[in-house]
Length: 250
Image (cartoon, rainbow, N blue to C red; front, side, top):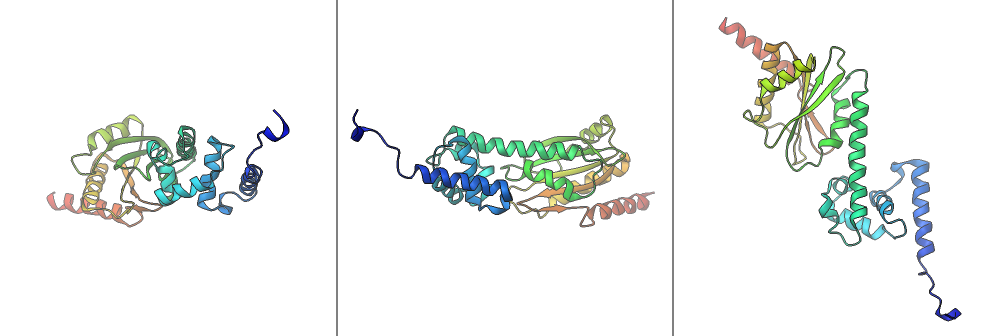
């Protein structure tokens, strides 16, 4: 092969490598706050294809899934429908989400005390936001308000027939829990409680009073937002209602 026949790399290889390096340095210096959503996605994609220009692919991801959260929450198969995204790219994105979820779960379980609804939301946001179906969780706490156990009760539409209070409180006794926090997500992204949400919560609070296990809160998780029954005063309202009903029949 003579000099003219030698294969030379495309002219944009050097500029692509330099662009990718600048993004990495920008992230290492200032974190994600210094990056646009498409730049964050671009960096994630380069983990699976380190020698490929991923900027255009990242922007296509945003067009299809609307925002960064939509891309992270996207199903594995749907990610691969985008031209340029292979199994390695999709795998990397899903691994990032699950790693973040595990991190916040472990961090939450290591907290010395449960302090606010926001503490729990910070973990639940990653494990419940973006789910296609409603998922109902129970968080069991000890005498120091430390979370000792987290359990998924069911997946589907929340209503009175879907929740089994006996099973929940049996688990509470088994785990030596003295208080509970309930949480479920709204796939619509709007955390406003439905009538069914309110009725289920009221029933669980009533059962808690009877079993002498305190219901601290019920959180509904939406898109980067949540509704707290405790913060809105509804837990206390249901406890007072139970006392009124009990007094009236005695």
